[in-house]
Structures are given as structure tokens and as C-alpha cells.
Image (tube, rainbow, N blue to C red; front, side, top):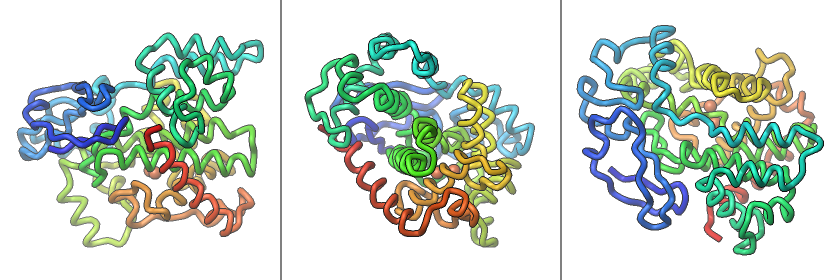
Length: 346
Ligand SMILES: [Fe+2]
Ligand SMILES: [Fe+2]
């Protein structure tokens, strides 16, 4: 099977046997850039429903058809296979919320994890952040870029591995979900900057992880691919509707429950929960922002996979955020540029 390093973009062929009989994520070093690549056991799928090992533990034929709460409970029990958001992000958020903290306090927290330091510096030196090759330490990056941008880079560094995976169930090649997530993070940030600048950082974080539920659900979608295909051929409805119909819940609902367990702040969890349909959130601004950014990324054709074929845009979101059609086109142009520049090597 083909895999693509989420850090340098190099493609490799890995034997499926590497993942056979594994119950948890396998880590291999990228032969090109030496960064860690996480291989989810679900990548080994393809042997058929009865003997495949999913990313959430070995499933029997009977379990493969579980739905609703039973399936959800099973997923929660086996979530240990999915790396949670690193502790360093939670600690950094606390430092940032403290008005007495300094540049060096945030740098110290980040420097406690060397793997993350390498990735933060790589992103800081990407053409988008404009410091090509000139930033050599986290402290230096915090002074040149400011703490908000450094927090943004930390979010990116911590999620690149998990979001870079291939999702066969969703028809997403390696790197597709990563690019989509980058686009929604940047789009959410740009919208927040126009309507409520105090939400900028949270909008970026929420946009970045809004589709994390797809990573969790992918093995279960893959097992039921035939059902999803027949749903799509019989009904003109969204992929989200197919998830609800076939699994009993969708990736947004599942992700919000998982993010609560990861102790992600509640307002970010809410935006993840309602990113496909912000109406039930009331007039929650962050939910509407992430929804429109998601729509902008999908309309731009950035990493949507099977989920982007039909997408229901909430009619009231533009009005609530006081955005015009031209604003959305402008955002679409900017996110395409952001994705291109952040994924380029310095
Ligand atoms: Fe989604
Ligand atoms: Fe999305």
C-alpha cells in the first residue's frame, strides 16, 4: 500500500503485513526527512470484513454491523489506539490564558517535547510564516512571530501526524485531510478576524480539528462501504446523512464527545459538534465560522473526499456573520494560498 509522509510529502510503499495483527498505531521514521509517520492499523484493511484488523481493535463479523450507542461505546472503549491531543497543547493554552506569562514561559512549555519542537520550527520556516530558514529556536520564533502565531504553530505541529493519514473509508489519500484541515483552520481564522478578532485563535484550533471524527470513524465506514455506496446510489443526500442512517451518529457528533474526553475547551467542542449544521447551536458564532470555512474549503476542492460531493450550507450563516458572497470568494483564494505555502518546504 502507498503512504505519504505528512511532513515532507514523500511517497513510499509499505507492506500491508507491517500492520497485520496490530491493535495499535505503528510508528515508522520517514526515510527522507526522519520525522515519525503514524500508520493506523485500519490501513491494513482489504482482507475482507471478517478477518481485518481495524484501528480500534480486532472486530468479529457480528461487531462489524453494530450501530448507534453500542457502536459508540465500543469506539470509546478502544480509543486508546488513537493518540490524544498532546499534553503540551493543554499546558500551552493555560500559559497563554495567564496575563502574567511571557514569551519565554510559552517557549519553555513547547521545549519540553523535542519532537514537537522540530515540527514547530519546520512550520515556522515554511514560506507562509515567512521566516524561511532563519528561525532556529522556539524562543526566537516566539519573539519574531508573537505568542499567538506560536500557539498556531504548536496546534499545527501537534496535529500534523494524526491528520496526515490515509482514510480509505472517506476516499481521502494521505495528506488530503491535513490539507482540508489547514484550509478550514485558516478560513475560520480569516472569518473570525473580520467578525470578532477575539475568536481568532480558537477559530484556528476548532477549524484544524473539526474533522477529527473522520479518523476515528474511518475503519467503520470502510467495513460498511457497500452500504454507503448503495445509500449514495439510492438517495440524493449528504455523506453526513449516510453516516447517521447507517451508523446511528455522524463524525461531528462523535468527535465532539471524544474532544470532551481530551479536555478541549467547551466552545471549541461546540463548534466541532455543529460544523455541518450550526443552526442547533443557537447563534454560536464559532460554530457558524467553522461551518462557513468548511464550506469554503469544500467549494475550493481542498481535501473533501467523499464528504464533499453534496454539502448543505446553512443559509443564515452568511447573514449572522455579515459576510457577502465576494468575502467568501476572497477567503477561498486566501485559503488556497495558505495551504500551498504551509505545505511547501522552506
Ligand atoms: Fe465534517
Ligand atoms: Fe470538513
